[in-house]
Length: 490
Image (cartoon, rainbow, N blue to C red; front, top):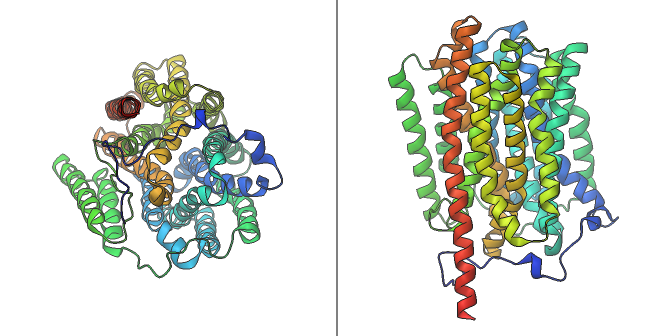
């Protein structure tokens, strides 16, 4: 695919929405022309948040009934590994079968996984259901993101990305609270079944408003080898968390790294690429921004796997209260996302891109301190900081990545965002399981020993959050440098 000429390391010059007099307004998303489309895309993306947070809150109770504590991190990692493989192939599925058929097929797979997990009599059956959920949700989320620039005019694309970030955060708040309530009053199985009406509404809207075929690249073959490499890499991380020795665990993590490197190299040489040109380069805003999209969820995934578990086993909270505290991050994500979306200054928006990862470093440090000391107030502060971190960065960074991507590659970038987010969570969940189980979590420890094992996992998460800040800072610096170069050239 030919690339436009550029005078710097950037593939294209960032679009300056602040100087565009035709920039869209939030109210346009609620007009009859765009309302139903906005609702459908938001539901498709919110399915990830609802499903992930619902299950995270309900699984400790399911484990208490069915057993399988050592498999706790498997549920998230398998779901995300499946969603990554599916999401990576979503753009090609959309090109070959059309957006409508792809969305309906993926929704049916997700529905089958939900029903299987809800009726499970063992953790192994739940895991199979989670794989099916991941396969369905990976395609749904990626295609919904890819449809944004196709179903909305360019002036509204940044607003839609902002709406997606806010809805994801709101869903992440409601999910744990609802799951905790359903688990306590009915059963943990009801927390799975709540997905059914959501997916039913989504399918109805998809059938109604999504054209049968939007993309024009049909007939493309799926990149089986590259998808297999991705799958093998993430499954290796999963097994690393349960390996019988540190040496085997390290070997599996190294194997995962090799698989991902080979995947990226093969994709760069392929005719039909999955990744946009320059992906993961350390010399461009696009490459560095994609690293941020990967690394922030990677650090956050430790909370996704073990925060509610910690609240229940270290502080003695029930599912509802533990789920509510776990969702505190989502509340501040939503509030800060709305606040940053209303900023008129592009300079402040760019500054928020690197300020968010910095707040995440501080927030993860607070969670580690709270787990180690038992001070609940420090945990609350950590959740607030992490929520603000994602709210400040996610929407503004997504818009920036679209701006610096050449027009003929934006479909790949937009579809890659949720897939890469899932990849971060999958890698982080596997590494969190490796750290916690390596410290003895699966050995039935008393409370003091359990605290040490969980503290180890959260300390590793602090270390993982630092590179995201460095990448974000460098990405914004490159944008600023490119803007100066353009000004001088003019």
